[in-house]
Length: 486
Image 1 (cartoon, rainbow, N blue to C red):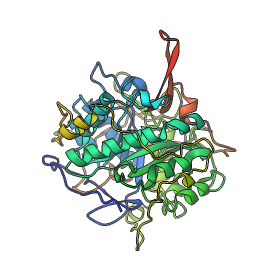
Image 2 (tube, rainbow, N blue to C red):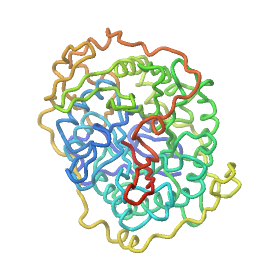
Image 3 (cartoon, helix red, strand yellow):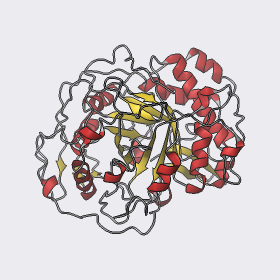
Image 4 (cartoon, rainbow, N blue to C red):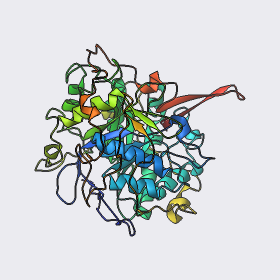
């Protein structure tokens, strides 16, 4: 059983609306109440690929005014977690982290980026597994470790996305998880879970899961602490069986680690009705799953957005935002967030063995690569210079940008409502803004019957999470990077 301590780093206690969670067996648990925590999340990458610009010192958590706008809207929506794909460890995130913290929201952070050298490659992963790459992932840990609302790190995202990558990637992906966990153990005052975000490719999903969650003799640090999946099988007015959620529950029921959707929200038909919300947070799912993350906050070319952003900082809520808000409002989150873990021993992980792997061609060798030259020295001595993050005081929670409803009416008095200590956000936490139009708006019902899974964003979008193919024109080849989202 993995138990993450609830110690707060010195300097991170100021205006702490949320506290670090523990992982007990296969659930997230509040150390204060002993209750389970359900992820009610949204994928947050404003600006898509342009939202991460290393040279300009820009990432999704670098502009406090933008974060304030978005935290206020997400608070109204009822979200308690954001997933951020690409962050720059050299940028100061104190104000944005503090804003989301005050709004009662946790952060799940991917350690990779879209740039070459900042992600493990799906193609020939041994070529991208070197000390400089690991140094960058450790720097992300340093930058976010002292925020109490840092919930978890993803060591990879959809790096295994087809049979060919399943044959080569698993040992290297598990090694990256090991390396990050060893760094956290040595340099962080509390344990922060590290895990993997998988593509919902059913032919290899459970092989991927078993490869990362099994117990490897003499190497407990390489085992994933959490496992998540990007799934788009529920389309329109589907149901638990038609969307094959029953298969997921069956496959993950005996998991030794928390399971949740790191992305969900098929966009066929559009606007989306999000009829899956009542099932994800209902009795059929909550025994095996700990909630999920809706893809995605900002509208991009792939048409999965909840909010349409303008370059001047203004924004317009889309029908998807309203539809999702209505689905959340139907649920009793007080009851959902007060679920207790079942009594008795937690499930134990199986021993790593080739017998766990069922798909022909999927890697069944559990001999992991050794650390690349120079990496152990970084783990021992730490990243130099190490970024430092801390919770800071926010003096003004009012949103400066204009935000409109779909009908063009302006939302007035928009602001973050700072929550009391230890309180997480839920629907109804922020009711100060004039947003009556949300309840009355009938723009798009999002109804319809899905006959099968929509193309996931990784396949449908021009650029998105997972294995992204970038043309290397000068070399006449392709560099396939994974573990990123745009």
